[in-house]
Length: 109
Length: 122
Image (cartoon, rainbow over all chains, first blue to last red; front, side, top):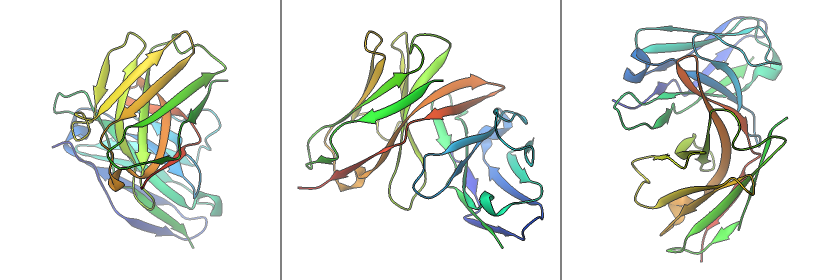
């Protein structure tokens, strides 16, 4: 399969920890990357590979992977973390394409 | 630092060809091992990968769009381009160009353009 599945919506209380998941067969072979997208803005890379943060991304963002599931964890969620989050990975079916998950809307309460 | 900027018509008629260009500034499109990609997002929906090109000219396309898509690169102008033929209203979306790096066991889009809205309508 070449699809990635995400929960459509997740909520978290301010200051608490939230995990956003991404499932797909390709994740058994490749790591995911994660993007944060706020309304009207382009996506921003927040995590790539096993658990790598680009420069400027707060260390409350972390990634992990197990089996066919990749996870993005926000430890101590802030109001500014309210956004849509997307995962992507390489497609493992051999056709050299990239696949995105459907996105998760994170609400910080 | 490297920046990307999309340009092209914001309105395309049905059955015509959508053409967009992404200009890379702050660095050479030929330097490093990057794939230069197009991604789109219909209003209120998720991201859809369209395809990518390496500076050698090799391309990969989304199988669902492959018959209609052509991505090319002009290293002399530091640009890469998207052509999508036979468009319909379903192709209405914000189109992003992005730099993709194969790193740490994944394909990561580390730099994005601001996006350009393309509407397909007569």
